[in-house]
Length: 492
Image (cartoon, rainbow, N blue to C red):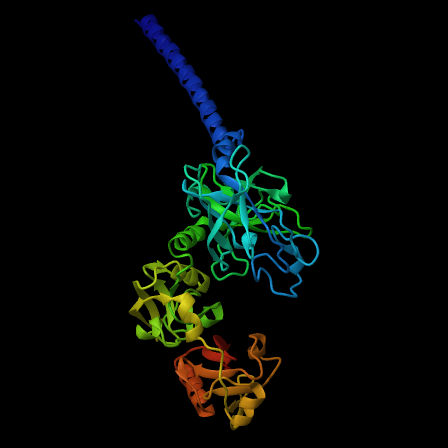
């Protein structure tokens, strides 16, 4: 009995050992497969761009014009005149000399419909007497194009050729999975007039702003040069997620920093240009500024630096809806607003005449307003005219500022554009006010979001803020016709 029990035990051990060996082998095999899958996933990059290039190239075009355009030709205001970076920013087509360019292969474009609509940059065709389209080798050469419309604000133009059944490409979503930082992209165009060319790279950054109100650029390291302007930036599905517009370069050639206006901006512009021949952007009718971290403590009910702070409300849509200077716009049409740039872009993309819910923070409470949007192109100049003039006071030194009520003499001296408020006549250069950029001639028109016309008004606001336990006071300061809010720390 004992020897039999031992034999059974040995059989069990042998079986257990075989089972363990099988499990170990299976685990090793599974680990190897998993490693291969992980490696393959990490190496998900195209073996070639040839198939994609072959697919989309028939829709990419070269653009030539018959005129010489003198002067600066790139996107206007890319950097301010005299900026130390001015020479580094080059539009993709500026020639030698004083920015002049001769009739030649000035740029690129792409067909977006089979009946011949073509998208390019405004600066490619600006001022041209005649525009000719050259299709992909083997296609139609020298086809005249009609200018449908332009938008200098985004540097986009739409052309039309009288041809049918053209190969075309479609726009993709520049905010989607195919346009993440690090994703592969492919640029096509006519660099340096050399003819059709393909380059590839990745999305280096998103939501870049150069200088325009509606800027939303995709930055890429795909090689783009002069002549690529107006050409498409493709994702790996062959969709256009950007229009190549500008490069950052010390020598005019590609150094791997290029900018393409995102399709999120371009599609709306193109649709309007095709339908109306011009843009029709929504208009809220306010002046706004970003909320800075030092303002948060001075704005009751605000938990962090976010939203758009309203500095002026002229007659228009916002005023009709009951919006006031000092309101902080936190939500527009259900979208949380992070800063002024985001608000401007969202409002501009909203249809004219639509009724939009807007949530604002006012005196610590949320207010829900309904705004019927106007049209920016026809309303802005009327709502914000140039300026007028006026007056001076008794003086007092408060918060590092020498302040005076407005008088005719001060109005003449500083060319003031308001008739009530406190004029800054001197500033302690060691004060916080000086570090915040306040200047002589600035006029404080509100303190603690209430109007001030006399020195005593400001003193009352300071006293009220101190009693409420606030550490800073929000001032509305006007310089010329432009208002902005500044928060100053209250003296202990």
